[in-house]
Image 1 (tube, rainbow, N blue to C red):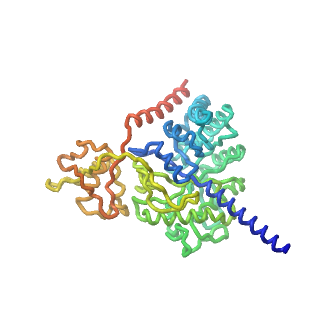
Image 2: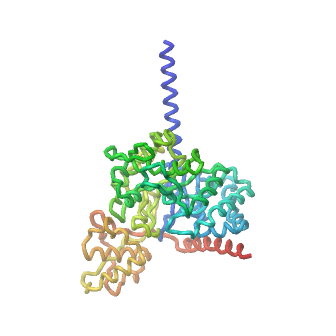
Image 3: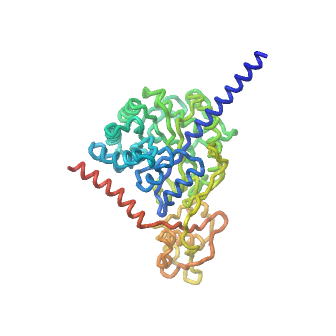
Length: 485
């Protein structure tokens, strides 16, 4: 009888521990909400989208006042971003840092019943990327120190932590990630030690991007199965251990570098991770769904990694909530297609984020422009149509037409029509934006075909957007003037 009771208590304790662990991991999953879109979804609709999908953590790339107002009273945990363009200013001016903290943190967290739940200030966005050279590197730690000091002066340093999102290209390995010889790039080593010392002193985690998709593009010895958490994947050896997936390998690369630098126990937050759905080979909704399901299962299993068993990331932020048609495509056309949802808030695939929802819920009450498209006029001489299409794509988003994209295989002149429509929609369906020297034709018949969607743009108040962007530039200009003074 006694042994039965002991067994029952042990089993119950294990179940309760498992439930609490899964709950903890689930709550630690958030999303990146970027606003680099020609027609962004209104913030109040996005907040409802987040809540309807039980997403309770959101990472921003700037301090957009309309977004912060919409997030107030939402009880969503917020990571607030400081753009790389502001790092030099904050590095050299305590007054500018104080002003920014007052306007973008204090104002929202001290707003009584409408308070926003700001947990982190992310100083910069991967400012140490190789492609940036030393454009931002000299200013990062100084900016972080000044923002931290500004938070302390505002009596917020116990509530809001300062972090610096980094990238995997900040690290180097002696033998292609197969040995334990992983360290920070030589040009970064001194700066990274200063940053890690700062983070450790203030109890802040290390924010880092992990991208199995980019690793697949760049590493010759990485397979698709290894990237997608498939059981059939051939294991990789690293640090004398066998790795079954790309995520664990990348994560333990970071763990090793932190240990080498003298910070073996520092918490890690995965600042960005996802899989794009268009704009390149292997960028599709099917593969994105497979990746996201594998990632969610792995995180919720609480297995951790070989170097940190049963110790998963402190938090994980999916890249991203929505597609953004204005994101830079310097790294590839897929950059505009990271979203769990399309630009208008429609789910691209099915995935259980493990937060009380078995599938993604679409955005509601989205207002669209009229059901009109711009296509090529087949009754005209189309000998110069390609030139017009190229011109249209230079001022609109045509990334779906790129090799591997969802519209890559549509035949001519349908691809011309796609280019015309992209320009037409981005320019608010104005009649003159479907002219193209008489080659364009406005139609009410949807030209979409197979997997190639000819989108209709959403309605956005341009007066509001103009005010929003001017507000951001105003803050930057004032900060610069403060430095000059």
